[in-house]
Image 1: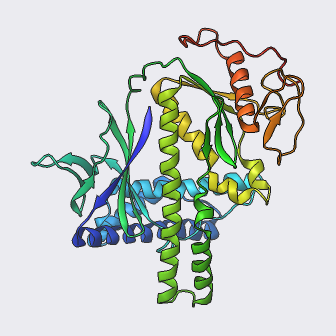
Image 2 (image 1 turned 180 degrees about the horizontal axis):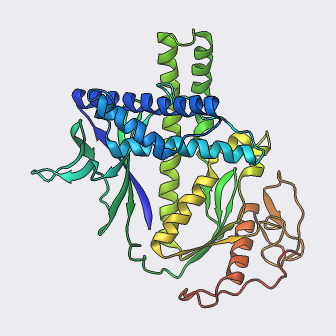
Image 3 (image 1 turned 90 degrees about the vertical axis):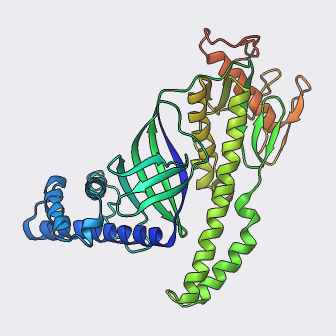
Length: 391
């Protein structure tokens, strides 16, 4: 199992200056590699391979000790692989008839990360006081906010050092055995995803939509208007742009934190989680729903839930969404209703409840009906309601 762990780096002034300088040199090398490929192709009609570029820039690195020479050799290889990957993706899109998007040169605001192999240029270790430090070549030992320990018997496969809003972070790609599964609780749940309530659970619980972006729209409008009235590239324009980026970053962090906590609670509580097998693309395509759909980030919810379930030894069962909102969870009768009708009322059996909770119950019923009969859920009946799904 491979997972990534992100930590904040606390640098002093000399370390910040050293990291900024090495990142600057990496950006120059990236642009030089792009320029070489472009120039050779225009002159000869032939491309340049990764191996040829590595041989060329390896010699350049050796010849310029005070500039390119500060870039770790393995990190330079990773950089050239990024260039190679960008060109391969360009030709793939070109052959597929898609908009090709030629690889672009990187300005100072478009190049923010460096890649390393752990043990070659960077190494995570503990100093004599037991404090966690990241040793970076030509930078020194950098303090790490090691807020979460790595799994036991894990191996760091890849390291990315990134600058974001003036701060530095390290992302560790770690390979480890799956942790011991959580003890079974014998509980199952169906979940309907929406925008009025982000999640509706089959037990009747509704998880409200915090509307992170909409709650900050007033401030965003002020900053966007201010930015539009200032001279592009000027000092005040840059200050306003920085404020705007910080606000968007705060909104994204709040959203990510909410989904991490919510998915963790669901995985801890339930052994089987049935959800709709859909993508939010249809919401994004609707101009009336697009902003709210982006703000809700239901795709992020599903991806976080999936990997947490895998780690815990639990199960997620995707369910076709057809008729989940229209069908009565009590008797199976189709009760047609528009999206504006938020309460499900069935004249056949008299059932009345929130339409999203009704959908969640249908999702759970179908999820249980298609589950592996050998699924061990102590004390849980896997009988689905007596109706034909999809009627």
